[in-house]
Image 1 (tube, one colour):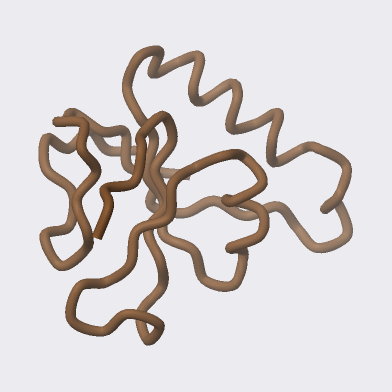
Image 2 (tube, one colour):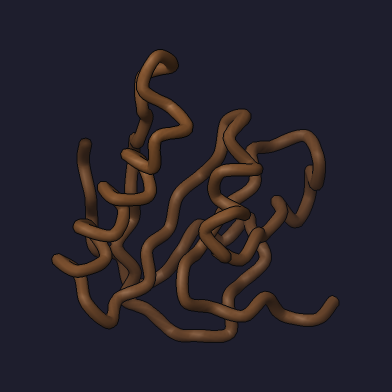
Amino acid sequence: MEIEIQEILNPEYERPARPGPYAVIHSFEVSEDHRRRALGTDALQLIADRYEGTPLEAFSAGAEKFWGSLGWARYEHTTEPGHSHPMFVSGTRQQAN
């Protein structure tokens, strides 16, 4: 797993109301045979503890239910909503459109 601190998130997506920095998770996956055991949730809690006070950001490629179950706000691509992977951000409120 790779995590990078960024001041600004991808400008092609809706913007969270909170300014940066953000801890951007570049890849995160729980192997299929270990899913639904709270391992992903536990791992993300460890990451959140490590980056305390810094929202986490991840893109979803088919795991929208997982990220949504964590209470992370969903942000869509501004020019291709529904065609690009949504962006999920912890600890933010989604802006009203």
